[in-house]
Every structure is written in C-alpha cells, then in structure tokens.
Image (cartoon, rainbow, N blue to C red; front, side, top):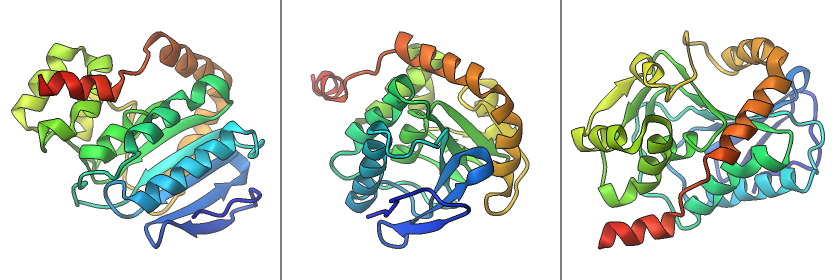
Length: 230
C-alpha cells in the first residue's frame, strides 16, 4: 500500500510491490505516480483506490495535480484485476468534486487497461515515443471503446477498434485523444517543465475539464458488457 500521511518536499514513496512510486513536486503542487509495470493488478488497484479516496476526503489539501506516469516501456497491458472499472470511474469523477486535475503521461506503448485508464484522466499528454494500441480481446476493450467514443464519436472509435491499429503520439494528437506531444526527457523533468507552463492556466483548465466531465457522463461498464454479450 502506498503510504502518504503527508505530502513532503520532493518526497519519494513506494507501494504496490516494486511497480509504483511517487514523487511530490512541491513547486507545482503535483503528485506524480510512476507506474513501471503494464496493466492494473490487484495491489495496484488497491493503492490507487486508497489514494483517490484520500484525495476525496480532502486529506491532501495542497494537491492540484495528480499525474500518472506510465513508464512501463514497450510492454502491453494484461487483463486487469477486479475493481479496475471502479477506480477508472473514480479517477474520472475526481475533477467534479475536488480541485485536483488528473493527467496521464504516456511514454511507451499504451494498450488495454493502461490506455483505458489514461482516457479517464482530465487530459492525456504523450512523449513522442508513445504509441496507442487498440489490439486485444474486444470484450476487454469496452471501457476503452466508450472513452474513445466520447472523444471521437462511436463510429470512428469502432473503426479504430476493428482496424486493430496502433497510433503514434502525433496521430493520437491529431484525433484529439492526446492533448500535447512533447520531446522525450528522463525522469520527471518533462513533467515539471510541462506543469510550469500548464500551471499558469490552472483555474481555467480545471473549470473546462470539470465542465467536460459533467456534460459527458461515464458509460456504465456492466451495462456495456451486457450489451456486448447479446
């Protein structure tokens, strides 16, 4: 479990085995959750659920940004453990009731549950090395289909899923899946530089992301799965 009793200056923590670590960027009021293994296993889901609940209870009062750093490289995501849909929805709704903006930071291959979860953040930022894959079992991609469909329209989302294609960061940006594409930088340097610019528009960005979430309600995954079986 990730232990975050208080946010500290440049503090580093670890949790969910050796696949998650966090860095608190005090100057930007940002917590970076670095994820070094693809997919969402049970410990990872529990860790993120605890963190999100802590934020919802206003136990991290200084926090403005929660950045998910998908640093797992070229490996594709396996099928997620139970509870994934719930934390994806909880993460998406965080913008409605808290001052926290969630950002997904893509570095390598984004597929399956990783791509799905990133689409449930307020915005997705990609380094030029990132790729966005629609490959996998269609029954495991319903949440991703719904999330991409809200952005592109469901006809276009369906065509992307059927094509079993992978988009480059630039292609995903052209489709409005990715907000910004940046040069590759090691560690959290790129995140710090990005937040230095993005932070100047915090109030406007939060209002826009909150409005977007409120007018685009989440699709119920259980209902979607039931439709897929019929």
